[in-house]
Image (cartoon, rainbow over the protein chains, first blue to last red):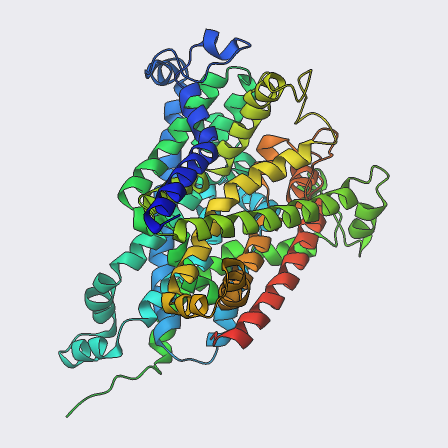
Length: 276
Length: 300
């Protein structure tokens, strides 16, 4: 085989592999377009009878909880993201730029904290939030999600700050900028891609979380879409077309981010974070 | 005159750091300490309000292993099985995918990006999708029946023998693109000319892979495997949604069993003790990992 024929072979082979590998996603998308009749028939067809959004319209009309859970998810993800940015980014700057006594211990703390299983803090947080009267509000979930995302966010962000040449800050300080002013006006603007990476990570962490809302929130009105979807499946388990429609709605914001923020969503980006 | 700025400004360093540390102290460090203490008590949903719980030493841990149903030891075993099989296949297949898409044919980058869609799915969705496909009248039974491999539908998720294996399979699928993506930069960084000179010396593809690619990828591989272990070992969502730990607790893992003790049985201390065991295992693996990266690269 010559080189160009080999490339054609690899192209065809990979294309088939991709199609097989992505088939479950195709199956989910088409299921969300099938009618009750199509989904219940014993011979499920590979293609839906028509490409339509009927189920999407129907689910929002008949299940008031779907829209509500979507809004709750947005509140949760956005607040988790904001808390993470406000707290993790200055902390990352501190452990990247300064030398101080407890630095090693602080770095070790972040490294260990990022691997903690959410289950470990689930029960204590539930007891804490109960006594703070925070259970049954989405803010209990926000606090828990932020706490579990901050350590990793610090580790993602630190390499970006390490890469900025010191001369940049020195120049600003000579021009009369304060430390905070330098951070705000010089450092943050040049670290934009790191900040977006952290923002995406924290948003997704909040958006995807199931364990926290399921534990802290009994009132279904306050559920985010993950908990709503889980409960919906328990109730309408056999209506897979509707369950998959709900799943697609949960997926939708992630898809948008994936399309527009491609390069911030690949894990390779956070390689440096792993090494601390 | 050139003014050097100092990096030894303890006040500034702490000013940037403290907000995050205070937050973590309240919502991460304190809960972890609380959980460790709870593991030595007999706190449950009933006596929490009256504060009539007390210290019982290692009783919870002993009871976990002495429980006649054997749920806990079984969940430890399941967690290891789930993690080890997931990691082996995710890694090998992820590596194979990375090698394949590192060949520069048309559309390779596009396809690699598309595969990441699988990784993008929230675990809740992945779990439900698995449930949908493994269902009694689902596509997997349908395919196997029409291929003549099975005569009657198999209850994949409701049989004790297959539920955990299905969860492993779903998790492997989910993890392949992630492993691929973590391994790809390392592969692309290997300079092409060393392969050319090896080819001139008569090395075949397999020799090139074993003697050149593998050694150069070793640090990356190690990181991917250990971090994969840590992330897989704490699985909760996927198992909870896909099998619910069932049937008859046959696919229960450490995180789900801890959840069930605390929030289904209301036995907070029992749940805390289970979670603590999960924590200790992860801590040991992390320590090993930290030691490894420390010798490998300059960490701090």
